[in-house]
Image 1 (cartoon, rainbow, N blue to C red):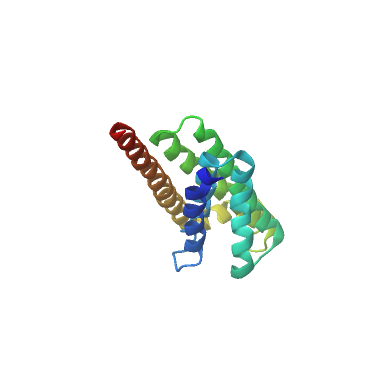
Image 2: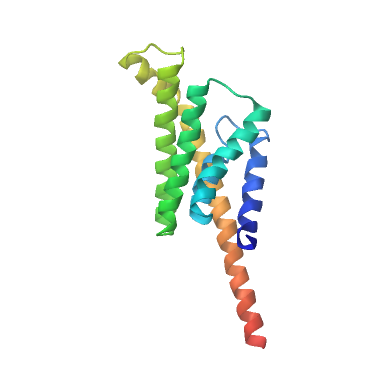
Length: 174
C-alpha cells in the first residue's frame, strides 16, 4: 500500500480540482480514471473514479440517474483503457488512450442525454443535434483529459525517475 501512496495523493489533488472553478467539463476525473488504470491494482482502478465521482456528486449534486450512470460507465471504460495502456506505457499509447477515452465518454454520455433526457427529439435528427450541441463540452473535456493526464502521469513518472536516481546515488556511496 505504501507504493500506492503517491498515486492516492495525486488522485486526491485531482478530485479536489473538481471543486475549484473551471470551464465546463474541464475536470480531472477522466484523467484520474486513465491514471488509476495505469498505476493502481485493477479493482481499485475501476472503483476509484466512480467513488470520486459519487463522493464529489454528493456535494456538487446528483441528476437524472440513467444519465448519471452513463457518466460513471464512461469513467469505468476510461479506467479500463488505462489498464490497457499500462501494458505498453509510452507517450503514444497514453495520448491515444486519453483521446480514445474522451471520445468514448462523449459518445456514451451524449447518447444518454438524447435517449433519457427531454432536450432533443427522440429521432436521428435529435441524436445528431445532441452530439453537435455537445461539441464545446467535448472540446473542454478532451483538453481537460489531456492536461490532467499529462500532469498526473508526468509528475508521477518524474517522481519515479528522481527516486531511482536517489536510490542509485545512495547505492553508489555505500
